[in-house]
Image 1 (tube, helix red, strand yellow):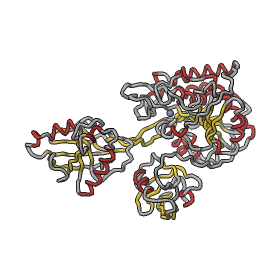
Image 2: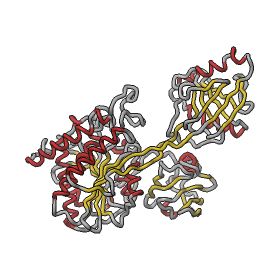
Image 3: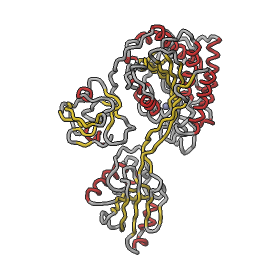
Image 4: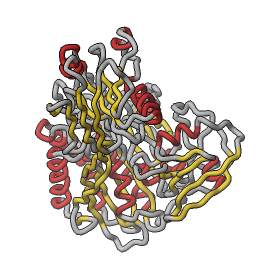
Length: 554
Ligand SMILES: [Zn+2]
């Protein structure tokens, strides 16, 4: 489960009306034993937290592929493994060099280019007591000592705004330096939302500043600074795994679960303080060893059940989920998943922590098809359901909802070990997970028996409460798009964008007179309007530039 939306899903309800333990048949016990074996391996130390694009992800993938071979289910395409490439923020390119006098700096400790730096070359002589002059402008980071110990001082924001201003005033390069030995020195923020400026911008540590610009050094005259900067998009590769039962049916059902997790927390998504420093493995037994094991078990059961013939069945294990649903997005796009050939999608993400006293189970996507009303009834007395009607949630079903497919999302809820090293295999409720699998198998059997593609309905977007703007367009931006403008990943019903005629895939480049280069300028543009304002939106569709009138609303 991704952390970005996680906090909107705290849907805890309590009930005491349930029997504490599910009765288990011999077959159930066999399933529970298999789940335990799968989750224990997936969450073991040797997989190192299954972080996307690591050896741990590869080992987990090999294990999943081997299981499909054992249960004799073929790959979806020529290979079970389907690698995908994506851009994950920015990085300092190899070859980037900062020189002061005749020394070359150690990037990171001595200083580094900022993520919004231009990728080009600038050089000039500077004196520390002569600010804002010549080619390269020297700018102190802090205005006073107090600010250098203030955890709320937004160094990156300050540097971006100041550098933008200095470039406008004529600087061809901007060098910020830590003038006080601050308590919270800036780091290279790979996910910085600030767009590139026109000039190179770097930060120097206090030590570097003292070394090259102390009174003794500068007595000898000006110091040459040479900036040769390249900031790149960081390319990463993940691997989805897909297996397929082809019943020669007109429609295919997709069952999915992500198998990637946080590794040691290197991507910044751990909720355990000091995770990276202490080099702690995030085992990810519930998130999402549980869904991975459940999916393999369901595949085995569906393969065995000869009555299930009216749909084809596609089982997909996604990677890149924890970084922002990259695997499922890539799968939908690259495998041409569309609502014309695919009936519905069921997603399992964190199904291993059923509470034995409440039996509380979150069922998401209920509003995406009228067919799901029956699914709610089918829970019977086994579960106390928390219904979430939205097709948009913190996991991979969202990507299929945006492809106009009915979706269902199963989730046993959050817990104190969420995104921490303590999410381990021993804490899984195996009989509880078996009960959830049986529930989902009942749903699949019912849908297959009815032999009908369920109708899709769009759901209202839940307000995230995050937006501080007076107006919004009602779009889901593609946060991975970094080629100028804001690409629309989805549009909400009854909101300004859809009313104006905007569609998924359109790239917004201008709102009113404000040019939009990316998320940063998009948000700046929104802040300029109030509800009821009428303006025009410029966008690119299929390579052609178009303009439409739009009325903005809250
Ligand atoms: Zn997660």
